[in-house]
Image (cartoon, rainbow, N blue to C red; front, side):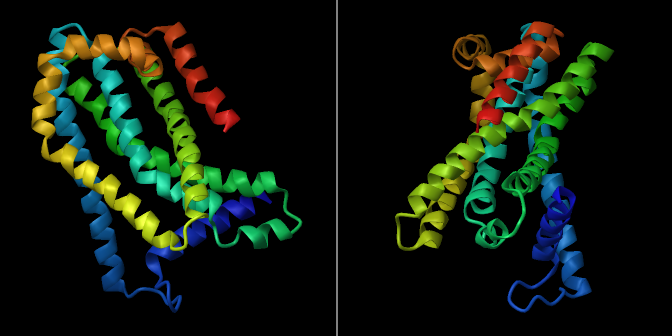
Length: 263
């Protein structure tokens, strides 16, 4: 049952990309090629943008013996951007899906319905993480930093765990947005306004990215100290990879798994 629901969900997602929503007809080959090129462009854009960001901060942090802070920043940036790009998808897929009533009226265990939707969201989170967090690891190797097999293993484990933390935040805030939208008349307008706000914040941050990079480099130790005290899971994410800290990895895993299970 779960596999059938998951296949249906994936098919619906692909149909949304390659079919016209109004008449359900397949898009023409030229339009499909255009969509494919646009997706490829967006992938290259994100990989280059974040790769350039991590390239700018890797060496200064390494020289200051703040390798853990480099990976902490990679994790923090991944959480923020993945959350921004998936929170509204989480809201629409989990809380406001049009087929919720139909599926719940059928003899299908609700846990399978939820699990299939959560799987799609987690896969989406992994896709965004691959565009942000993975380049950080590649840049770290390119900069001739010391790399060990244990460090690579810890990096992979953190990569697998991090989307659970993002999903926790996306589910919680998606639930809040769903509650708010249920109390307003025009849901689409409210969702559009919130989307524009998120986009405006993103553009504002990106337009000053060079200034932020210089600030990070100049005040790296002070910011690292603040993160160590206030954003503890992100701190242990960095130490787990940079220092192969097993206890740090366990603590970070608990910070990802336990809240996700509760949500």
